[in-house]
Image 1 (cartoon, rainbow, N blue to C red):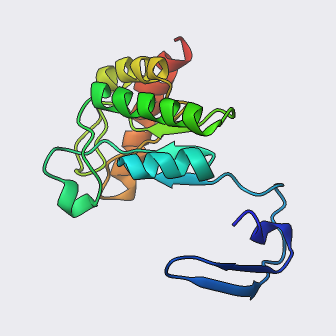
Image 2: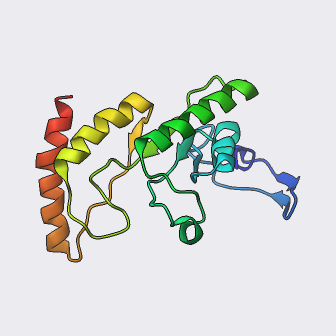
Image 3: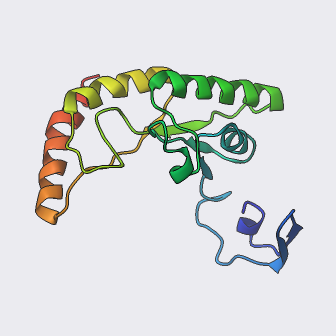
Length: 167
């Protein structure tokens, strides 16, 4: 992608792919191009993020979800911390000096159900995630209708964003 974003013709081959003379125009306004984020909880995904990306996007996922989500579970901050340590160790071993951005969903939010927001857990979890090295948060708010979603958004702003500003 980085080669394609230069606006020059790209010819490359991989194990199961071939790109012959592809040119991406117009070039991205953001140079050298938009950040590349790599998702997944596996060690291979972490290595890809460290070696090729700007950021890593693991996701909280319950035990037993590996088959459905095609990635190992992360059920606790301790498991996330272990993977972050692995990312840092791998970065050191390959000579990466640029920081690796990490995004994660705080406790108290659930991307798999339409459960409500546990604002206290979210606020407490944000501080803990920052201490682990998480640099961005992802948020999923429940709502089957526009009205319900807007209510959730309003309560999130009041019960989560306001207290987080004070951290």
